[in-house]
Amino acid sequence: MRLLLGSLFALAVAAVVGLGATYLALTRGAAFGALSISSWTAWPKTGTIDADPYARAMIARTGQLPIALGDGVSFTSQADDRGKLLDGRCDVVLAGVTPAARFWTLTLYNVDGELVANSVNRYGFTSQEIVRNAGGSFEIVVAPRANPGNWLPTGGVERYALVLRFYDTAVGVSTKAGREVPMPTINTRSCP
Amino acid sequence: MIRWLLLLFGGALLGGIVHLATVIIMPRTATQDAYSRLARIAPVNTVTALPAPTPENAAMPFMDPAFASAVCRYDLSQGPLKLTVPVSLAYTSVSFYTRYGVAYYAINDRAAGRRVIELDLMTIEQHNLMPEDEDVTAADRLIVESPTLTGLIAIRALAPEPGLMPVAQTAIAAAQCKQQEESKASGK
Image (cartoon, one colour):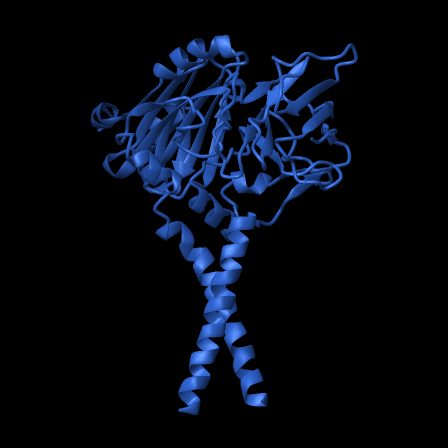
């Protein structure tokens, strides 16, 4: 009886620990080889045949096709530079410059990777659509209500993720440390 | 007391094994992976244009709405495939994925250096079976080796402005992936 109880206990612990760790790893999107630059993170290796088992499991679970490394690299951010989670009811400002790439796109998704409905049907920007300052830097306002300049509507969702994709670029291929790669800053300007 | 601690430790150790096993098995059991999602709308060995993603409807999560995209869900069991993709105005790329959504090769219009991206997709065995001389005469033919028998080819063209989306879609619509049976027969 004691043996039976004991093995049941051990098996229960194994199930909770094992499945819990798997669930956490897959929902948090854990994978090795993350490239973090300020509040942006990319997993360049996820777009190659050398993707680790965690990356493979994440790809299969979400059902996305990761951007291949020969195509480009995708940076994601879910928080501003101070670590505050991006809130669709606030005015968030992206400012600065981007690393060298033939094209880049910025897209706003909800946490499940779906586009967010809004009144003007704008889901993102490409590098050609952006209005820039004289020096080549730009400012994008991510906000629920219309703003002058480059306005990316949030649709008022509570949580969202920004995905900045660089196409035909050396970023991720040759970048080890992120210091020499300039990425736009993310700051929450005002919250209601 | 010690007995229960030991059991707890043993359970945690076993839990670690369960964790690793489930992570590794995950891609083989997933029913909502990209290949399964696309199997419903994309026939085998033909190019299928994907509808532009909208908030209500998207073929896959995290699709870039600035791109016109199409997929070719391939099966190499009947022989190699020939892929031709005309290059669009701004940026065109072709990415190859295994059955489980792992990217193994990608090429863009500039790397291809022509108006049309042309390549042959085959398994490693099929490449080994190719006659030597054919390999030489077709030196400028780009050959891609697929690590799996089935998989996905994603063809994407950028519309730098929303108004250019029809142009990108037209370029993608002319893309072809076909079984190359004729060339095989004539080669023998």
